[in-house]
Length: 341
Image 1 (cartoon, rainbow, N blue to C red):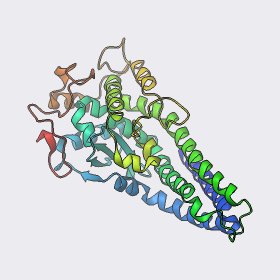
Image 2 (image 1 turned 90 degrees about the horizontal axis):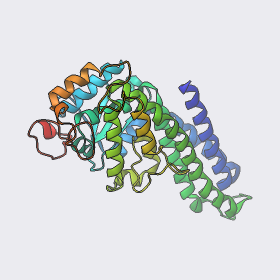
Image 3 (image 1 turned 90 degrees about the vertical axis):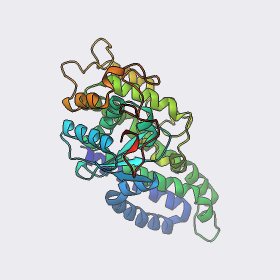
């Protein structure tokens, strides 16, 4: 079903791209847009994940360079029955995370250093379980392709004045077409992003809570991330707003409400849905009828987070990171063991 949705999305974005080309450059513009769109569709399918990671300056890590974080993702992937994804760190103070890749066999998950330094082990587990849920649901392809095509459509609209309105380009709509392209292109791309994110985030929250076994840890993480997102500017996301829908919380500064222009559901609504999954609201309580995943129980023991609930910065699922005993609070490096070693 998701492959059909992806195909429909690509067809819609291609038609939109061609329509903008027609408005800007007439039939010749439409044919050029078709060729460009076909090339971008092929490129997006195979390489959009690499492009998104590169645009965020993500650095791949492994069991040697980020042992605790890598092991946590590995345990979660086993709990979900997924292949081990590639793991990336982004040197960014704003706490956030996203997943990318065309299928579970070629997936990657990325977290910012701000996420690891501000959240507890259980909270980070909830966030990364949410991202693995996107991988399991095969949301990552459609989200990544959308980010690439939406960015291209927005860019095409922004450059419309440079190519449209010329008296010699045989464009019957002239400046009217240029203005329509500049307004409609980014708006249409934004609507597609909104439709994708707002329906899929709730499903990923629920499945992520099942994978980690602690809905309230994910709820606490969402509250912390959303609060910090308004106070910390993510420069990469601000330069490339078409990627915003890929993150677990909208990384664009100052956008939080459940409105027409939001790429994410309201955080309070997501937290309420997660709390409804727990037994009588006990902090860290497992999903009704389930026990916490064994790998995560062991992670709590190893990290020392289990007995420190309530000492975090606004959360109810353990202390803020770093996780290990006596570690300092410097964010982890993509080339070293981070604050835990």
